[in-house]
Image (cartoon, rainbow, N blue to C red; front, side, top):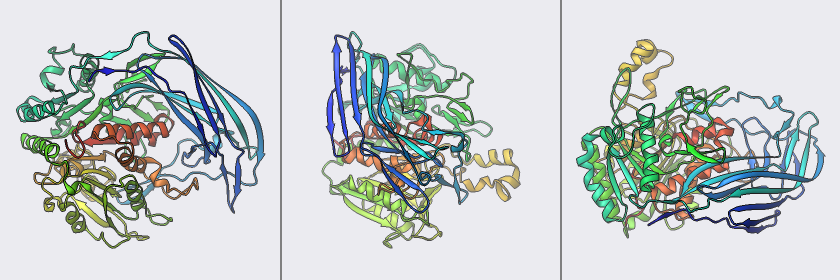
Length: 634
């Protein structure tokens, strides 16, 4: 189908019990304007023993930066066709009033993770006491360039803050009405990308022959696919002039050229790490983010290869993830910060194969899945595995995420492997459930590259759910689920037995095996990480797995007191749950499209450049699978 970027902006009116939002459009040929009126209801101020809660009718979310006041706000995203120039954004505030508070506004909790089995809370680098007014402005906006379905768009995300907290006076300033004026210029000609290919598969020369049946299968099913030799086509001149300062950037430029010259929507990278002690050796390049969250200073980020463009000075330009030009990509440590777009511009997945045997296994699995799954009863099962991720609050976080995901999957029989029900007591419970077959599989708890587990209710003992050494017992054959796993490092695909030698060289025998930092027990020396082992099993496992390459941060409790567990609304839990929303409710039936839509949902709800853990959550998500996969088969 032709890749035509349709030029339209839809005006609409939303009327609810909370408030009135009216959006209208004026236009004159190519110059257009959107006028938006947003009305909020007067704040409801509730005092408890220790704090104040502010609610505002018309707001649709809350600011919840850890340690900062919980402030209601309204968020909306405007979408424009590629080539649009956004000329001006003006926001006028009307009808201000001041409310004095008896108590301080409730603050958000610190997110947590587990490092070496110990619960670690995140500490902010900036204290709320450094502010007098929070938030400092009544509104903010940010731009992004990304893909929605198969349409490339410019995203303008706007947030309005009807409440500002004046800390020195213990009061709030409430603004009842916002008038928003956005002027923009549409491109004089429609931008039509060529329709030559839908997908490129990038592979080292060693894997090309094994991948040819997959290329033929995709072409037969309407996904026009071309196989790219990473060694000769990208660094050479076979298709496009070679650009970029290293192999990773060269490959990213190749993807950019393939979008503009061929009209691709999907990229499948085939190749993982196959050696290296002092320096890792890869079949296909990787990029590490250098965002330091206090627990680790870098992690794998395949989003780099999908985030091709950014919007800058009314133009779309190449996004190199190095805005400060210091050769450190995606840097964020203290005041050193690369400002990056984060929106994916293509649907991208990776098969981190290390040899031709794994390539053959995955090719056979994808072809069989897409050819034989349609209409099978086993596909209509969804297995959820969880427990109490953080004891001490009112929720069993893993089970809450599982339950909300099931709400979006109404047509699926649910198989609950939960510690609270007694159906989850160890790995055999998980192995037996998977062996029956399922369309979807969702774990939420804690992990490392080798294993995944969680807690029983209100009990700090551990229940191991599934380790890589247990996976050989799985016997679901061709009844393969799409898997989502919430847990640290389950998707850390740079693991290698050679990391033992690297670790001893770096930390010494004592620091690696017998004393701090005890790096041996990080399990980075296993031959395959958890997610890839499950996906690449020969006679079963998963057809694709979405996992986190680094530390996975959680939220706990219900600090905004909206009746929804925060674990489902923030950090990794937001992604885990909303992937199923995008498939089950929003009808994204292509794997890469559902995955990308969830990344964009996260970016719009939790702008990555506002808070480093939000940025990390988006960056470290890894899809190990074919992004063009037809969920449920053809």
